[in-house]
Structures are given as structure tokens and as C-alpha cells.
Image 1 (cartoon, one colour):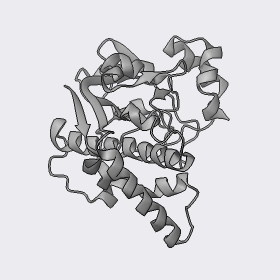
Image 2: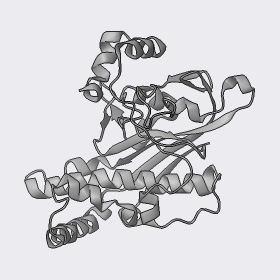
Image 3: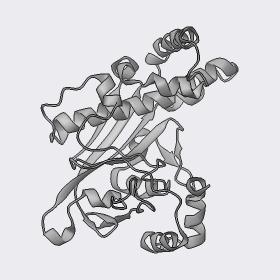
Length: 270
């Protein structure tokens, strides 16, 4: 299954996590009055953006399995990285591939791949007004994340349908009370931005206006991509600083020169 969803801003505004918006503006921990003043301006801006900046979500569901630290989707292998140190003593070093049924079991599991993005026009609004330009850009980032939240909810309840009876509040969604995980590219458990090239090959990000740079970064900047996994015990984790042995092994499995892979992972390791 592959599907493109188009959201108006008023549809996904309730899914915005304002904590991250305030953090982007350096207002975390600041007086509530300062936050409320900016939020009022932000909501007024969202009304202006609503008629010109739709938000897009693209996802596809595939049969999948794991093979060691690789995720297998059809004829495509997606190598993953393994956690360098366990979160707590006595716990295993996790890898996202751990949350899929091994291919040796002879039965397919399932995985989702996704991307969301705000309309490209959000990148050019108020070019001559630094404050409003930054306001639009930080809102666009939040809208791409909100679209991922809304899309993932619909996938769990309807399209994949593994949680048809889920009824969570927005606060519970932000606290990730749902079954499964949605690790995004560039985040601690999936730090390699070049994985976007693989995701793009499988789902076709260009159909929602996303193009990739040489390093796998997405344009428009207000875009999110990643995986959807349904395993009840799946959870987020931080891989940690990647050792030379795993770097070499990962580069080999990705079919990428070590020097290039080091560049892709440099930001994560710094």
C-alpha cells in the first residue's frame, strides 16, 4: 500500500507540539506571558499560511524482515546501526532491525516508510521580513512533524490497522503512548541521513515535492522522513558515538566507502 495525504493547516494544527516551537525560539522555561504572546502571533500566521501552504504526507507499507542488523524490504536491504552501549546495565544493545521478525522464521513481518513536508512556498514567504520569515520557518518545521503525528495515527488505526481501537489525546500522542515507534532519519536511533536515498527509492519522495541534497538532507527543510514499526516492545534509543569497527561494517553493508560514510555520520559523532 502506498498513499499520499494532503492536509490543510487547520487539520493538523491541533497536533503541533508547541514545546518544541518555544524551544526553537529560546523561550523554554521563560515566563508564560512571553510564550503566549508568541503563540498568539504564531496562530495568526497559521491562518495566513492556511490558504497557500498545504502539508503533505506520503507513506507506504511493505512486507519486511530482519537479517542480522539489516532490514529487508523486497529486494532492498536497509542496514541499521546498533546501539554502542545499552540504555541500562544488563539490557541488550538495540538495533531497529531487532523489532522485525527474522527472515529465518520464514514468515513476513511489516514495516512502514514515510515522508512529510510543507509546501515549498513556505520557504519564500516574507523574504524581506526577518521576524515573520523565521516565524513561518519554525512553524513549517512544526507542521511537518504534526503531519507525521497525524499520518502515523491514521496508519495505526486504519491503513495498517494494528491499533483500530486506539483513542489517545494529543498530549498522549506527544508522550508516545501508542503502540510502535516512528524513528525519523537524523534522530538518535537512525542518524545516517543518506538512508533517505534508500527511502526515496522505495516510496518516491518527489511526489510530495521533496528533493535530496548530496548528503541526503531534504528540501524543503521542513520535511520529516523515517520508519514506522508496530512491535509492542519497540522503543526509541540513542546509538551513541559510533566506533570505528561498526563504522567500517556499516559502510560495507551500505556499499559506501568508509570515508564517505564517515562524512554522513560526522554530525552524529561530533
